[in-house]
Length: 229
Ligand code: SF4
Ligand code: SF4
Image (tube, rainbow, N blue to C red):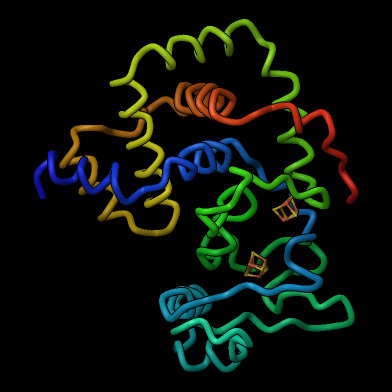
């Protein structure tokens, strides 16, 4: 694919609301409270997730499917759900003592996207702040402090003025998401087509993500946020 046709596809198919969500996910740090891995709700997995779980645990996909998944009650095509166990309905892959996923680095894609990336691209709110997630509480605290930081305000101003820089950042965010979802080859191909690469220095990427996130969301709601964990 040539750069022009990629950019045409990119601007018509990727919703603008996805970019601040990815920027937030870059900045988010899971605190391993385990809250999102138990209770009502479930993690939806597809065949690729099942193969990943099987490969990680050194078992066959059919064994992973029967041992760890149940049919999806909502019958999403090609999907099953991870089994819940015990009175608190914990995910069967949660290490109860460590409060951490047993396959964290290979967890299903829906778990990798949580909590900042929403599957609902039509959602009114760009991002949902989960009040029972300790990582979200720390994320909100960081935003509250940083939104008035002079250097961050300067970065926002510079990003607002430079449309080429902004477009390159959106491509980087999409590449980051593609990599995080385990599609390493695809991410590299996007880099080759567009000539954009993820910065070597993690802190400069994070500073750009912070500036981008703060310039795209309304921050008024941050003051009303309350952690209920
Ligand atoms: S697979 Fe891991 S991250 Fe996903 S719900 Fe289960 S324990 Fe949590
Ligand atoms: S609720 Fe948030 S901090 Fe806790 S395990 Fe889930 S993502 Fe991590």
